[in-house]
Amino acid sequence: MNSSTVICVLLVLINLSFVKGEQTLEASFVFGDSIVDAGNNNFIQSLSKANLPPNGIDFMANGGKPTGRFTNGRTNADIVGEELGLKDYALPFLDPNCKGKAILKGVNYASGAAGIMNQTGRLFVNRISMDIQIDYFNITRKQLDGLLGPSNAKELLMKKSMFSITIGANDFLNNYLLPVLSIGERISETPNTFIDGLIKNLRGQLTRLYKLDARKIVVASVGPIGCIPYQKQINRVNEDECVDLPNKLAKQYNGRLKDLLKELTDNLPGATFVHANIYDLVMDIMTNYTKYGFQTASVACCGNGGQYQGIIPCGPQSSMCKDRSKYVFWDPYHPSEATNLIIAKKLVDGDTNYVSPINLRQLKDL
Ligand SMILES: *[C@@H]1O[C@H](CO)[C@@H](O)[C@H](O)[C@H]1NC(C)=O
Ligand SMILES: *[C@@H]1O[C@H](CO)[C@@H](O)[C@H](O)[C@H]1NC(C)=O
Ligand SMILES: *[C@@H]1O[C@H](CO)[C@@H](O)[C@H](O)[C@H]1NC(C)=O
Image (cartoon, rainbow, N blue to C red; front, side):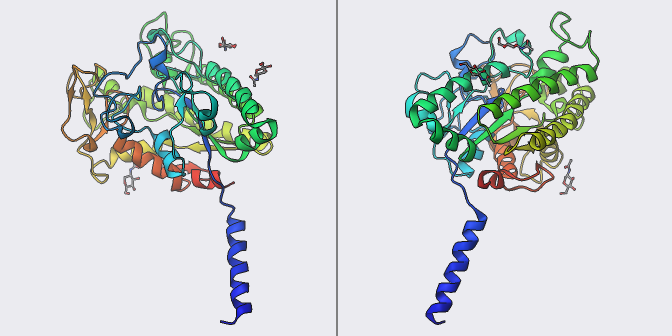
């Protein structure tokens, strides 16, 4: 090769990497419920807490001690951040250390028992509902202006941040489906009316995030909540069966969610809303659990009560399985870290069956 060929090749390479437009991810802002709560509920009066061992037993960044995460290790939000190059996990908003420069890496607002609706999760006394989580982000937003100046803060949020929202399961499990008449909405509303309300609220919430400069936004669908050990236990279904109504409601909501995200991407200039198809992803893992190396997709690793250990949440009195990597579910409600790893990797690099219209690595690089 002569030197002009070399230069030419170099120019092509430089050009390609420019076209590929790799972005560095600097911050992750996490909203949602206990699936991604990183400890906010430790700081409020709530009955929904994971601050007791053996929760966190595999969370090495904290020496295997509980952090408030409702799983044995990392949440899927933690792992997605790592996969996309983040060095630190976003701190819980209510953590006293979540101030100053720490917020430049992002903030976690998620709260166990929270829902799209304010009243969801009432049974747990306190929780930070989605509306309040966005109020909190509005506080962070002003702090970022103070730290970086308005134009750099905008740049960080619009180009170098990812926003993830994992919410909705509690609106069914801890609201609509609750048999307690004074709390559940089922007595007064049809599924259609209730889901209309969820979508209307969520549209408002996502639009508020956009107004506060969120642009790269991923929203998780509700998983197959009729297949969690708790539902299987209280409804006494067979090992290879799930409870029909919760799954039906989740699917109905998820269809509407997908349309909503497309509508928002079409209507809000510069924003991309990605649909994380958690429902089909978890269904695949549960149906094909042996293929993924699991021993069971129906029994909780840590819990108590019946054949699925599905009634009593994980705590010091619970029985715990021997090999945590062989269980799809950590406790009666939440996936194990092993499951979170599979989910996170499919969201980051997977195809449109599970994450659409683009995957999270492509979203980061926009
Ligand atoms: C939920 O609560 C927030 C904060 O108190 C309030 O701003 C919002 O209007 C409430 N939403 C509904 C639908 O009641
Ligand atoms: C953020 O807070 C300010 C008040 O400090 C308020 O005027 C504004 O409407 C809020 N923005 C959103 C999107 O909630
Ligand atoms: C289970 O795996 C098979 C083979 O990969 C796949 O065709 C099927 O769709 C999976 N099941 C679910 C429920 O995703």
